[in-house]
Image 1 (cartoon, rainbow, N blue to C red):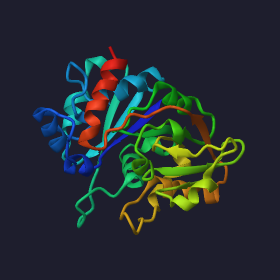
Image 2 (cartoon, rainbow, N blue to C red; image 1 turned 30 degrees about the vertical axis):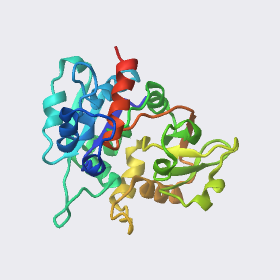
Image 3 (cartoon, helix red, strand yellow; image 1 turned 180 degrees about the horizontal axis):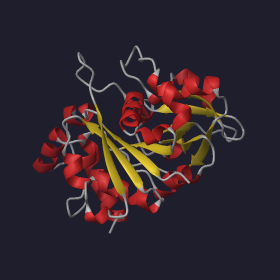
Length: 282
């Protein structure tokens, strides 16, 4: 069983900070959105942030060691979660995504996982799950990856159940599987004319919400050698996964799931996320 979870919280939250709110968001929440990482914006009635609820789900799914990958100036995560009595059953560790000299923003998700593995070498040989800090994944999704016996695994979300505008969904990666739901390909931001070629055996288009389980020894070199995407100037996890599959076909299992994944991308997402957590978490 895989009991290690890496939560990616090293991004610059640029879309959140640059967005406008048109749904009556309070000045306090606007200020948080402009200064804090998305995972630390207060959502619950007692001021708990999104990352709190993500940890709750992770603990219920069986994870026991948590790695937060944060920015080099982000001590707020440590203040919030280091030695937190509410998570006494979890071992919470931290890693930093350092920004290379000459860049203004982090180098992408593949670089984030690579830097975490460098700072916590046990991940180079262990199995672990990776997810975003600004998505609230369900206990079921996290548990499926925890108990998977495949070298690598991912959740294959049914596009029809993701309650996002089509323009936002078009920015997500799309996955192609064989009849046994072993991953054949993953493509970031595919063109519309490509979409039909990604339909699975049930006529569904499967979307990646950037949650994966990896065998550390199997993915490490592909993260280290991940090329930079020329359009987005980042090292992206889907690229590392595609390169791994070229050398090790059918080594990643997809688990189909038909459910929504609440997300914090812009200020307009904050109110709906607050409603969600206040409804589902007493």
